[in-house]
Image (cartoon, rainbow, N blue to C red; front, side, top):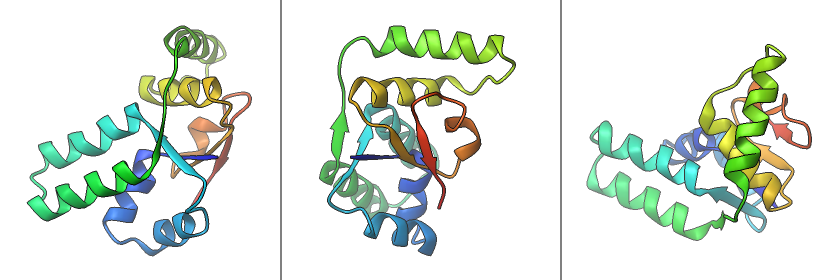
Length: 128
């Protein structure tokens, strides 16, 4: 299973060829997290996308497996603190996404932000 980050989902919805090609190679094994759903839908609400664009986003998100579980809040806090102490801090949402992935034994993410996710032990970041 491969997690798809918000930026890739957004780029896919915008019709960007690199995101479309990447997701088309992994159609049977993609998932995302509630954090990614929040980020994608927040953008649709804040930036006034059309009703059709909002519905397309919902259809895509509904077609993906959603990673969930317990204990990822604790793991995210530990990951974040460790990275900050090493001088390699990343944003909170990326730590939450990584912790959810690890809690679900998912070790790969498709993202435009490989620099941040590659800092997390146990996560392989694939750029597109």
